[in-house]
Image 1 (cartoon, rainbow, N blue to C red):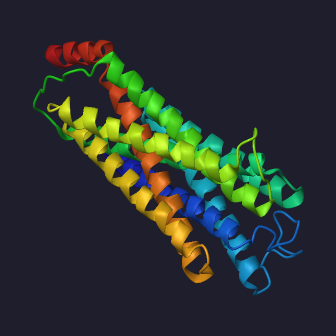
Image 2: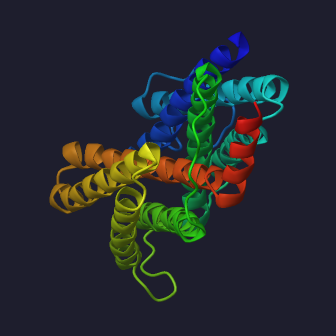
Length: 307
């Protein structure tokens, strides 16, 4: 269908802009440009077009990209509600994308007007991560739907185990928790917070990252070794392992570039981009194992055989 092809490209554009908005938020944080427009929103130092200072341009650009992400989210949500009435999952993803764009936008505005704690500011990044992951699932789901509509040969699907499904879901939730500790570390450093629940923010994040490394290795192992009939599950598992290995390398690089600001910012941004990609991959894997659960696969196979 023409509407399916149009929506898959619209979803892709939304996902790309959402990524840029998430990346821009990291740039704002690392360059300390959050108050580049003063404590004003939506204006920038009393103007809609900011003065030509680096901080104001960075903050204003982030606001503009976030605004564009909001507009695209509205368009995709409306499109999926109209043309994908049978795909409640894609409608849900488009709704979550729109909802979390609005939430993180509101939190960003409140952070500008009113000072926020490190814990709250870490949630700001966490919500933008959920918005990006929702947009990724929406995009991949739309492309999968377009591919399925072109497929005419019946293919019997095999389910994944409930244990594997629950493990992937738990891994995704834990990844978000680990990401939050990293975001909290970033904002606690700016606010000179020495401990959280008696644990130094750096130690808290290092512990969480170490556990995450083991969890993702297990995800990759079970995805690849136990699911030879599911190429997408295997590919997602291998991708998650590659991303966590890159994350560990970049994390080590952070320690060696801490005294070199010209390099440190780029390493931090790379750290953020990789973890955002990892979380999005795990979210989509969570969606796929839900689709491949025994009950749903049995219903899908029965429906395909009748057609």
